[in-house]
Image (spheres, rainbow, N blue to C red):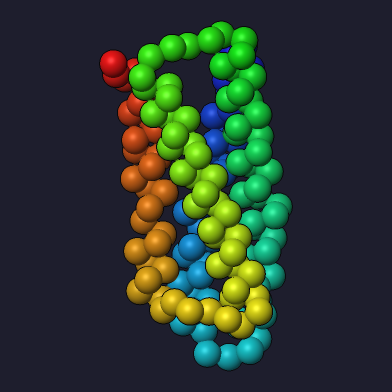
Length: 137
């Protein structure tokens, strides 16, 4: 089970790397004012979302599920953690929608909005790690 836990953590780090970096790319994309830059950001965003973030998220959840099914845990903390994972999945999907909007040149947000949007996964990461380590309740 230690291998499964290690893989769960490795893919969680991978997923969060994407969740931190993709909105940062959105900031730069929103600031770009020339077509070649915007096209470059579209490619970077697509590759990050589909090549790193999505596989990282899917594998994080898969290995987490494997851990939970092999060694069932109980307590309020695990349900709070699962709720936060659901919020992360929703954030991930929202990132995908924003990426599509940017790809279709239908951006509705400025770079400042994306800067604030970029901070959300930090709060979730802190909460998830604290729940997993401290196991309150």
